[in-house]
Length: 226
Image (tube, rainbow, N blue to C red; front, side, top):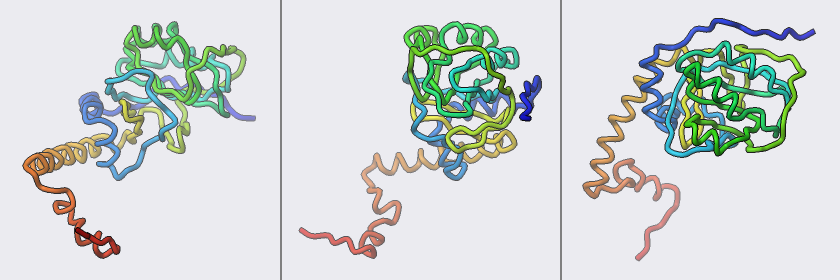
């Protein structure tokens, strides 16, 4: 028999580190940590121009049943992001404005869910950001057990409770909690490097020369003709 657990307390990364990873953005963080942690293009934001990061409170739920989301609200705190996964594919609208109201009261920064959400206009007007696989008015029930704050799989990426979730217009990236400070160092270094590169490109230098691609093109058999 499978155990269904709700873990009350989890470890979280340093709040300042989390905030700065959010400011760096998913593209920078993903590249900086070795192109890992990206959950894939199947999760899209319902809003635009939002960049956040927070500690993952995880949910493993049954498709079409949002009881464990309600249970997870109590486990959430300031600066968290709720990460909801399902034991099988689900297109149900498992989350709406009422749950968002409850999460906002606890300081939760957003939701990442591999099923669907509804009340999207309300969610946007409330300023509660969501990354989701589906938008659907299909309702749910509250009958099936599940777990909160256990390891879950999101787009092939393992999410541990307390991992850092970075989310913006470009997608969702997971940073392991223990690697958060290192990830920030790598991201800062990449931002500094890109600033130098941006100045060189703005001055008229070409990427094919800066990156040493001209000879590589020739070596690959690409011919320049007039």
